[in-house]
Image 1 (cartoon, rainbow, N blue to C red):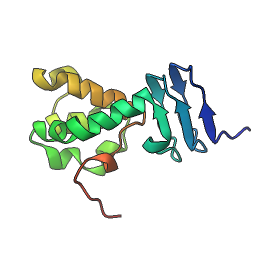
Image 2: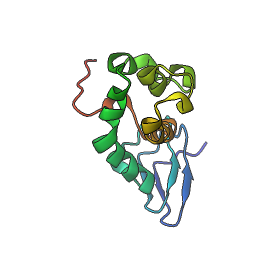
Image 3: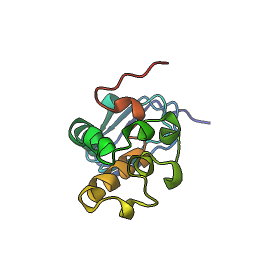
Image 4: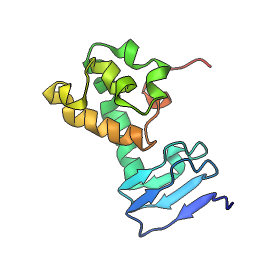
Length: 136
């Protein structure tokens, strides 16, 4: 088995590195799509991709208002919603109390879908929610 600590591909448009736990650095500055779910050693700062920068911008401007928009913030922040990979237990399902992304209020649907894309690809985690401190 080969262990990869670093991926460097300036021309990559898509990177699939799911569950590559030894990956510590990803340098693919043109990658618009990145699947880094379960890459436990890769931080967002060491993920040099367009997708990671878009995720950072989303966290700064949209994440907290989105989580609060459905009036169920405390429920959406429960750890079990962030350790899932199905809609039934997704943070967005919990935040809005809905059965699908299309059931979210129309004004939030594009942000819900953006959240899902980042979350499903490992570019968004519970500890990134601005202003929230978690105890271990």
